[in-house]
Length: 129
Image (cartoon, rainbow, N blue to C red):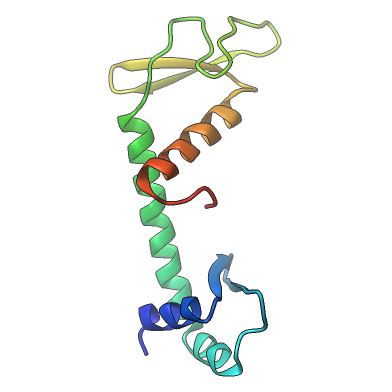
């Protein structure tokens, strides 16, 4: 059985297979069938490798989308909150090609999360990574 077939079998039985480091995480409403657990266990390392490749490709698509849809902000204005300079919270410069934007250091995680969520929606990847 191929990795794709094993993951499709899991999905058809209501089991979502994700990664946590080198571990497979199975999420389901009910306990997975022993046969499915055996299939996933035998192919664990191939499944881990395939899921890592999928995650890397998804990440590449998200980063590309964020870069392709980068919106410049006026100098001295945070692209996330719209406020100006703060002595205790420096503006971080963001560059994509010749476009430039700024966000407060404290706003950067929220700005990035919002952009990545927007990318996931636009790319049809859902909200959860």
